[in-house]
Length: 239
Length: 398
Image (cartoon, rainbow over all chains, first blue to last red; front, side, top):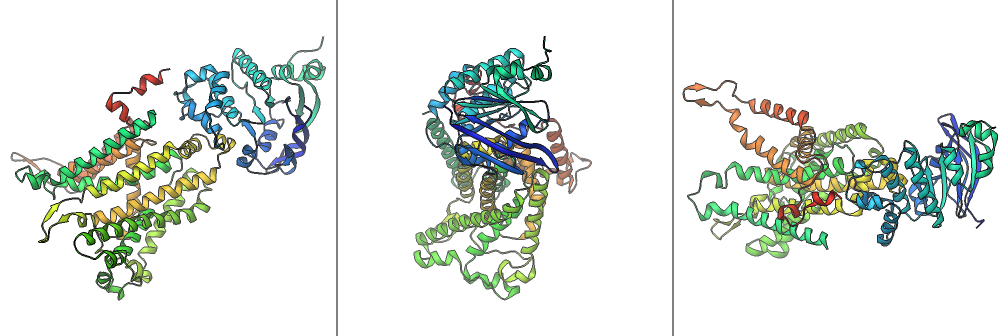
């Protein structure tokens, strides 16, 4: 249970002189939901993009499943079982729902039927729309599709970048319910959120990122009751 | 199961089409009293041949522009490579002296046609076998040469995006054309002069001992080769590679995040598209019965791009339909605009040489402005729907 799936050591990322991430270290253990919360521009997304290989780090290490994957290309990283649900969903609008799901399992050569059934089990709405083009889905359905697509890769670690972005509160609750279910079924989750309230309720452990550094860490409930977090991210003052 | 049934139906449709083409070409021999239009020299067959060739090139361009989202304008360059490869490999050695007379013969004595005639003989059935084999291998090699060049060009060029890629590939095609017209390479490319004397489409007509045509196949051959190549492209689009191409077109970042290697798949699409453009180039050389760099200008690329846009970017059947309409209009239906016409004694104003292109431009502008989706958008003609056994529309509505 306490085995580390992902370990980030002193990660630094900069975009042409601007330091987005300034020495972040954290870890994710098998079977956990870990969340990174923070304001816009804190460096959450940059961290995630670096882990998945879309951006190369300036320095630091990313260790996944005991293997150094720092600076490897995304294909190699995905093939090790690290899937990402990108920010803003980014489903393929002109591909059907089913084709979108199949792309998620692009690097797998085995039979996909059981995984497609599993995803449809989580999201019955997608089964109804399996012949519809991704672009015709509603925002919530697109987010479901993005999560389902990532699940098709049978990830050891599923990374989600702001799954609540631009969704109605009721839909956000559905999405987080699904995250709980996926986690209960044995997938480790690294969640990045601005919606700190939802994220902290669902997470085992959480890190608060500010200005490219880790400002605070603790269990979800610890941070929920922390006054500074409440003031800065939950919009409620201590009383 | 369903997939198999549909591909079987497609196979039947293509076979019927091909048989229909053979009948159409030969019907004037059986019934000589038919209208002029069925005569072998009528514009109908010119249009059919040219459109068969162009449809392959248009589909290959659509694979790149419409399905992978790479805006490349190098199609004429790859056609040129294919045309010259085919021509140089199949001109009989005996003809080379005459074709390359300005340069004192060809540096490249080898000819596939001679090689196979050495094995199977040059007359009768053996001659037919050797010509078919020589043409087939030369066409495949033409595609391979174009594909190989695409690979080497792709290494630097595919790192560029959208407009930059278009400019780079267009520039490449123009450079190639200049190199092939370079007099110093005359011993290989015949300089700015044309290479001719190789087997063309009419070489496939079957003649009897006295030289009379028994069975015309000169329209059937380009149809057959184009249909086969387009079938291969369609199969590719429906494979998991095709899905990855479309994913890259829709969203590069998301595709990369799903583990689709961008460079590898872009290269694959570029090389395959260029391969079929090369094959199309070889067919074009057969159609015009000569290979000359002058023909493969950027205007040709624009023509093909126009066809792809009119047909619908991302639709194979759209490209094919648009090719036939476009070629028929430019070579046949709008021809009358180029000559002076009289209604009774009144001369219709404006009609004169070149007016066809004016009308054509207006038609194209109307299409691009008001029907920007093209004829088919990104849909395909469903053979299942033609057979009315399956209604994909209804199925899609949940």
